[in-house]
Amino acid sequence: MEITRYRGGFVVLLMLASIGLFAQSEAFNPHSKGHAFLQWGYNRSFYTNSTITLKGADYNLVLHKVSAHDRPTTPVTYNNYLKFDHLTVPQNNWRLGYFIKDNLAITFGTDHMKYVMDQNQTVNVDGSIERESVYKGVYNNRPTVMTEDFLTFEHTDGLNYVNAEIEKYNPVAASKSGNLIFNAMFGGGAGVLFPKTNAKVLDYERNDRFHISGFGLSAKAAVEVVFFKRLFLKFEAKEGYINMPNIILHAKGIQGKGSQDFLFTEFDGVLGWSFMAHRPKPKAKIAG
Image (cartoon, rainbow, N blue to C red; front, side, top):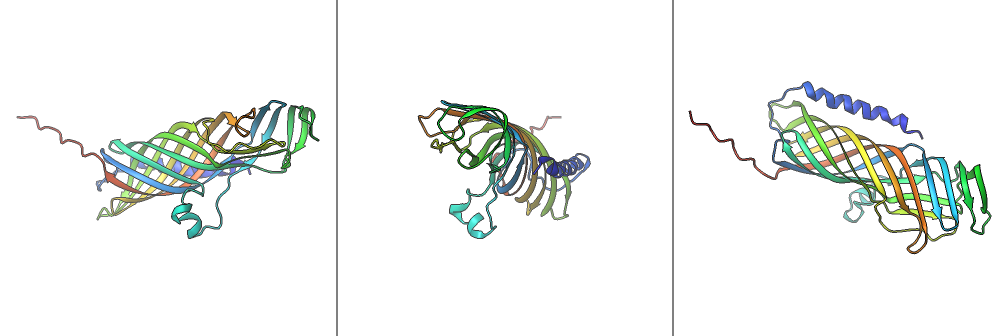
């Protein structure tokens, strides 16, 4: 499924966010300087095809235009999404933010996506395999089926994008009581990839440990509804780039590294709480 089909959602949210640049509101502002927030939610993600390089003691392979998908937890039930010991199992997002100026926040969080190579797809492969197996030989752009005994490749615990971002909020509308506020937001940031890669190359024992594999860059837009001045619901669309030159493939002690880079589109819905973390000092009056 091509990622370009989903970029329209990002563009729509970006347009909605830009509306706030021209809007005025005198309502209570939960995003004033000194406020902070904590949010939690879930996501869906989509990826472009990528080139995957695999290098071990007795193989050196380049796989071209490899397709992949995310892995949402189904069905959507209380046990799967809201039960305390299952909260971190689905594809989730958490973020902590602090407003350094009115409507301008610095934030830190993790986008816990999941990346699963489409099994049994046919891709063109370059390189060689010296390990004794039915796959031993030289590959010169050879079409090869990604069977389970050739390669399984996942970042499913997960594709963890740990990042810092800047978020700019713009008021759009509010009720007279101030108990219902509509905001728009756009922002961006950068971070590191900290995946737990589940990859099985040929008959090697797979890796199953977290590691820093690379970096990411991203931009996003969102619409937000604030209830009773503190509780908020936010819908975000994010576009980003991921580059992972240091993917650990095998169990500890076995030589094997991978690399890949790709673009991603992510949609998420989050629920959060805003609170006063630091009350700014009032400006001193100038004696007349």
